[in-house]
Amino acid sequence: MTNRPDYSLEQALIAQGNRWIAGVDEVGRGPLAGPVTAAAVILDAAAIPEGINDSKQLTAARRNLLEDAITGNAMVAVAHATVEEIDELNILRASHLAMMRAIEALPVVPDHVLVDGNRLPKALRLPATAIVKGDARSLSIGAASILAKIARDRIMEDLAQQFPGYGWESNAGYPTPAHKSALQDLGVTPHHRRSFAPVRNILCRDES
Image (cartoon, rainbow, N blue to C red; front, side, top):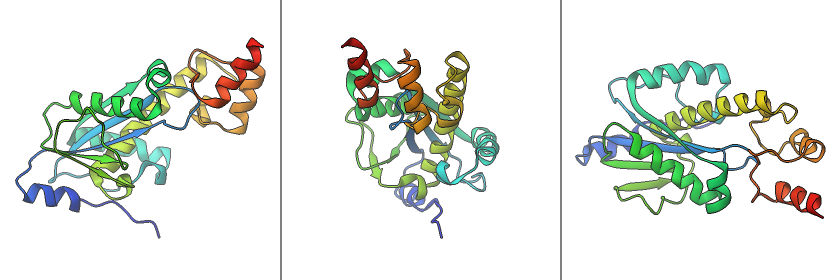
């Protein structure tokens, strides 16, 4: 049975006198193409939508329904780090950059930030806690995971129209066999991450 997130981490922080608790998550660290996307969400404790969970545990239809409920009842922000930034910084630092942009885009400054994962962004100067598997433990992080995944999937669906053949509308840029085969056959696009080995290897092959 899959554990479902709850609001206990947020409630404990609220009991300590904090008001605005932001959950932050990112998607897109593993793909060979496209940006990395982060979302920050401050839920209203009196109006938390039913059914929030780790985005990976939800169908696309369920995520889309929850998107409307979350954005209608919470303070939210979504931000990205580009392929160029991923290649320049490395994927972890680019992920943290996207997280920082999302946090800074919130309409209020959080009193505490709950970040999915085992590391906090080095630039984060607010009180914060890293939560391993946070999207399955915290409703705020779970809500952020949903918004981040929806936003990034839409970007990849749009890019799939511009660069057909890579299957981005279904694989979202992840290194599926079909995507890697298309890379071999069609080559590298401007939206591929050149610092990632499968892409870099093809570029080196073409240069030689």
